[in-house]
Image (cartoon, helix red, strand yellow):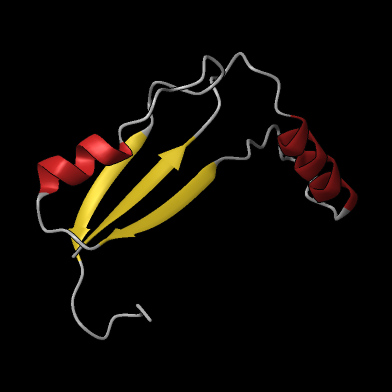
Amino acid sequence: MLQAKIFIRLKPNVLDPQGKAVSNSLHQLGYVKVVETRVSKYIEISFDDDNEQAVEEQVHLRRPACQSKHRKLHLYHRKDGDGLT
């Protein structure tokens, strides 16, 4: 069994309204030295397959133009009893 861990973020030149809202909230809480925050996505997908190449092909999706080319994919072998139901 494999688990894919995917981290996706916006390109630096794309506006991030969620990140701006987080920055504003931090400033209101007294974190005045915060310059910028960016909101990203982290996704974990578990597969009932041990073939890394097949899983990587399934996970490899087209990247929208606004997403960073620095999208990262990591595959991990899952062990029995580590949280799957």
